[in-house]
Length: 458
Image 1: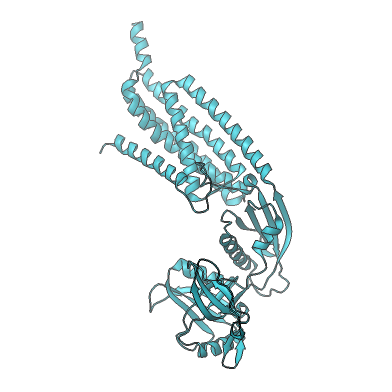
Image 2 (image 1 turned 90 degrees about the horizontal axis):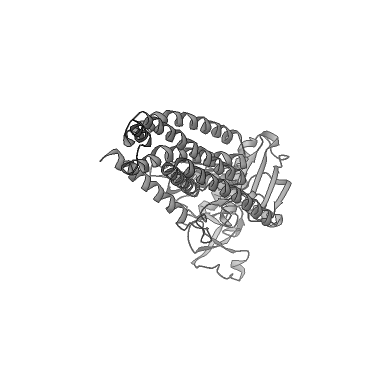
């Protein structure tokens, strides 16, 4: 297969993938817009931003940064469960000045956001009294046996519910085992059954309680709950007296790591103290994006007109390449689930200039080759060959700057860096591959006007 045909196939495949990422219905996306799969940031969509400080008054001998990461994991999971997958949960600062920053687009009532985040997560073990499969929460059961029992949904299992009682009955007495007695949980390789498992370690009090429970629960399920949800319900194989247990199930490493993190951070000995809240109304967000889009469209139209007036047929090619890069950019944002912010829109507008710059460099090189008397096809090949190094070097410096912004920046600055990086990479591809494919296809219909002029003069 010739190189020209390969380039055309690559160009078609990439634009097709971009449209698929933009148009394929994604879970949680609404509306019929081509941009429905692109997530909008707080500054565009509006919402609430909350900053929390960790209450370290009762924390002794624990790494604050590790503690903050555990808190962030729990909050992230709560927001995902509530359907706020576009929310951003980040860590600001370090050491004792560490803050947890939560940004939730679409929520303008701070109290609603605070209810989602809630208090510190609560992990506990329980006893299963009943099990059912139902699309809705079953009705409560009454009687002495079911006193204090609740129907809780099983994590990652559709419509599966367990009737759980926190008081675990052992003979004539009942005990409780909470996450405060779990001192460690980590994933490890399951050499006997394959896959991965989760190793749990209890403190001295938890070890005794857990030993009493497992003596009575052999061949029975012992569920573990987190935030009113059953995260796992393993079967007790034998009495466990050492204070160390393992949860098996041929987990993948990612699942085992997530489960260990949830168990370990489920009952953190720290509270969150709200130190700041900010609210941005949706009207302001709509006004910002409306003005930004109008400015971007106006600039795009002017560039398109200029390229056609100045470069004629090659200008049309440049305009098509510019639109191609825009679709590619939005498709990439949808694929990577990047959150589009106002600075991100500025990055998109900036890529308009980089895409046009690359084409102008190439077109001027092609014109130089034509003036030297070469054919149109030979001029196109020579022009791209000589312009490639210049375009790659110029864009690499921009990409390096964007990497620095992403690494050291936060929030909207990272959004700008992401869109700029994707846009610049896309502009290089459209300039060197898309434009070349179109020009080579049009070359039989193009004439070297410079050679024609010289012949007429002769």
